Length: 264
View 1 (cartoon, one colour):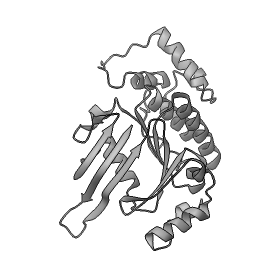
View 2 (cartoon, rainbow, N blue to C red):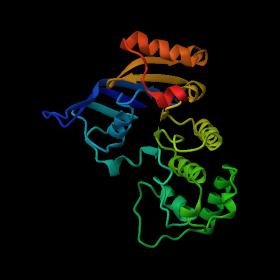
View 3 (cartoon, helix red, strand yellow):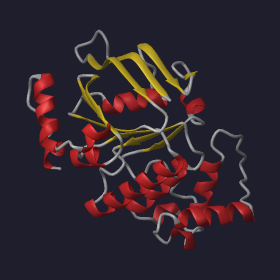
View 4 (cartoon, rainbow, N blue to C red):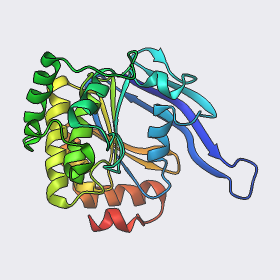
């Protein structure tokens, strides 16, 4: 479903601020893979997601989703293939619009949109049923402005919007990092439910090693712009945080120095 083939990306090339973010990165995901991604600061995790999303072009290599080469496709044209939830709960929704209007926008992703958006009774009932699955009472607040919602509610709504059109690939960029532990656990529970329901191929960056082990069927560790560890299935289920730290030290030759991930 996803083929990242030998992609490289250097920022500020030829200057004193040159930074190699991706260095011959290769990653293949099968349909239905739920892959968690961990790594220290500057490992290339977010750069990889942004490259797949088309936020910036890669220097070399190819990005292919479901047989379609997206390497040179602009960001807005990739929208019909991708769903994405960002780290910031304020991103991914329109704060000044109502909940049902945000859902209507998501439902029309990849289609022609008009200045005046009419939501039919049938659509409204569909949105109500979908909101019920979040178990947050939002089905009774469909005309509320999204800006009035809490961070957890907005993130859950963004997740619903990102999966509404059953994307070829779901990108989750540390989507629980800004939430308190209880709310983060609720959003991750909702994530698992949505991914399983539609068997979505998913790439989830997380700063929490325990979450990386507990969720998904596959885990990759990145270091200096490429994958240094790839584990799946029963082997992944048996992992502990200490195993990941040991593997990082073994492959990289240095200690894991991301305090934020260590504390989690």
